[in-house]
Image 1 (tube, rainbow, N blue to C red):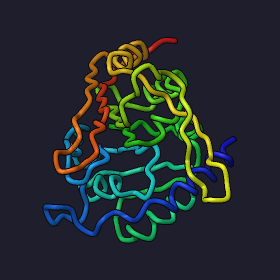
Image 2: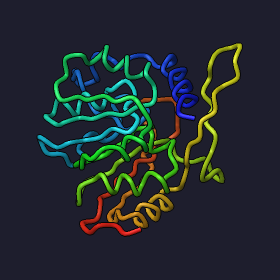
Image 3: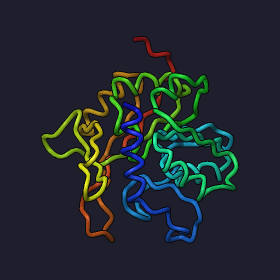
Amino acid sequence: MSDTRSAAWDDYSKTKPQRRTTNADGETTWFNWTQYADHGPGVEVLALQPGDCVLDLGCGSGGNLAHVATLGMKAVGIDLSPKQLAKAHERWPDVDGMELHQGDALQFLGDTFTIFDAVYSVFGAAWFTDPRLLLPIVHARLKPGGVFGFSQRPPVEGCYGCQASYIPRGDDEDPAVVKRWDYQPDIWSSLLKEYGFPEVTATVLPASEADQRTTGTLLVRAVRGVQPQLF
């Protein structure tokens, strides 16, 4: 199953160009939660301090992760796609503190003994993993008071829970199909509180006024409780 999903995300990688050299402010690295350029909040959502250890679930070609590393964090990324990670190595070869791993997010979280100060996912593995499997293990690998943040497209009305995402593979092939999990903001809040994140904000950020597209971005921020979670 992982090989099938890895190939699908390799196909996706072919459709995505490298991140721009600079953003609108002339910065060479930056953090972007939304699908729109120069839009929305930044890394401050994660409430990081220099020296923190941060995990990116589904880091792709590494743009957000590189920015976290330049701020003085230990920035760890996991992604299923070798092609996406190759793009990350190509684009950010000289960024200190950036550590990349190829594989499944759940397996990585299950195998590591690292406790992270923050965990995040931008249109990444948090969208494409069953939350009832992901949330307990994120909780276990996040320090008390640490932030778990993720963003994705908001759900289509009436299409909730496990859905199908179709990834184009070319004119002569059927698209690859991967699973994603879509919920309304209040359902995400309830799920996160159920799994030991008592402080949750889940909102849909409106689309950029500079863009013709109108779909907003669901941004969820949750703080891990200070007490161990018992299951």
